[in-house]
Length: 270
Ligand SMILES: [Fe+2]
Image (tube, rainbow, N blue to C red; front, top):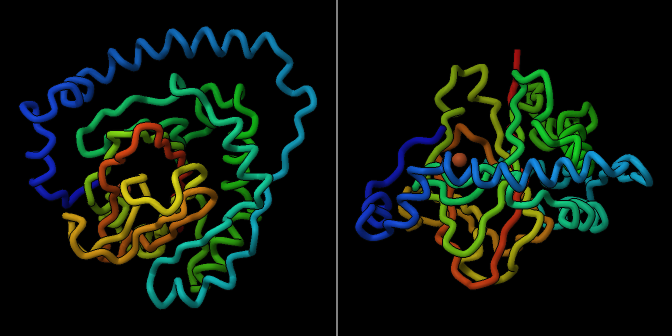
């Protein structure tokens, strides 16, 4: 969950000003039910095909992230362009799950689709991931010893972090995320001090404002910018969750704009 929102956005997107969005959020379960028809049909079709056939996909990063360690430790955030190898990013984007696999927007403060939500307390990976082998591989990689080592090398401190949660998001024209802080920063010190948030932008519109680049701000009204990413194809924003930052993105403007992200949080689990 999130906290410390500014009231001005709830006024801007209230029932009178944005009735359709308001009703879609209130009735997200109905939208979800509608999507489930397509989901069931699609997954039935996929289960009939032999998905394992010819499947070979290895995840590779473009660097071991050590070169960003100094900047990260000085600023408590860093932005990495070309996060995955080009081929890895391309394969993930080409095999991105359809809209019906995502939960529709539920909160007016987070107007975009979430999917395949997983956290470390769950024994199994999310439902339907078996029909998305590229995504399954990606989740296994983020929860692997190899990636854990890379994250801890970037942080270069006393903590031994592990993967806390993973999710996918799809945003498009009209999507918005009000600036806020994440609830993980309110947890006890053992969890909140080492917590870091990793937002990997896999597909988006580069070099244009209002494209859904999640930025960091000193305030909760997008006024005091710390950093706003302009490269949304294969890049990552990493920051310490406990820091006094707000994060969010302004409403996406532009007819055909779409943004895919992979989000993961790391912290000490024991
Ligand atoms: Fe957040």
